[in-house]
Image (tube, rainbow, N blue to C red):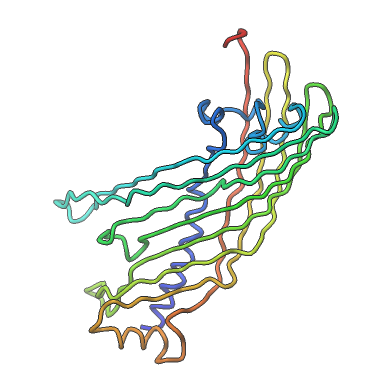
Length: 287
């Protein structure tokens, strides 16, 4: 039993690695969002720090751009078995508010700098209490915080390059329900839940971008390197709500008192690299 519950704890940790790549948030500017984020080949304002930092080389003076995006998520599933069960299981209604703060300054015709705070990965999933998959995952809440200084060099009137760093912190909370007393013919009895939560150490990545901007068109690319965040002291808190089985379950989790119900562990969370390439063309003055 103890080994099984320790395995459960490890699986809860690993679940965090799977969510990061699926929760990329690209809504960092109102204008860019209205254009389907097709702005890698153009720079309109300081939100270029998020979409293509080389674009700040074409902005004049000092610029600031701030945004809060309200994202409402909902997911639903229908179980494959039993085949006559058409129950639709839905997530709870939640609103997630990723933020973006971007400031840029152009020193001269050649050099511009910028600083940004953004949440390019995050969101969460919160299923109802009776969700059939609650023993795998019931609640996931993931937040990332990227602090990104950038320098851009405008080598010609039409061409700008940038290099930057990403200083990354992450927060994660994972909750799943517990099964105990399982056997070959039965998955076991629901006895409680375990929550894994923690704040990561600081990690460092980098960005690189280019923007070519002519009078009637342009193109650009942006690359953000992957980052590995390590959680060296994550908290695993077990709650046993099956009164009849509490003493036996707690004894197995704690190895008969040698450990606490509130344990700690380590984990890694990988935020993936991504690359974007964009073109823009003005066919007429209005198109």
